[in-house]
Image (cartoon, rainbow, N blue to C red; front, side):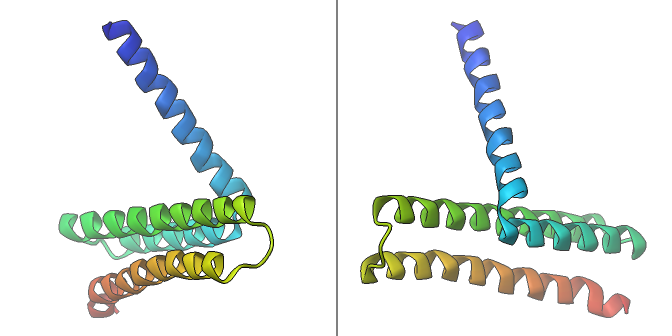
Length: 119
């Protein structure tokens, strides 16, 4: 049973990696977020941020990228289920985009807290 469990976990990792690669390869919003994440990571090395600041920065990068991925999945599912415009589908897409907005605002605030004193 443990071989089956381990094999399933490895397959799950493979699928997750493939999904992350698909997002990075095909989704402009994720590409923008990845570029911002790289710039902020370089800034972290340049300004020698503390371990706590690194943890917050990594956490918020992961949060924004994850919610952006979920938003993309919601939009794709909505378009698949109902390709034509529908007010309820539009509402659901707006809510998903709003979640990304909240995460992005949190990311901006954390970046300001970390980097403004260093400038």
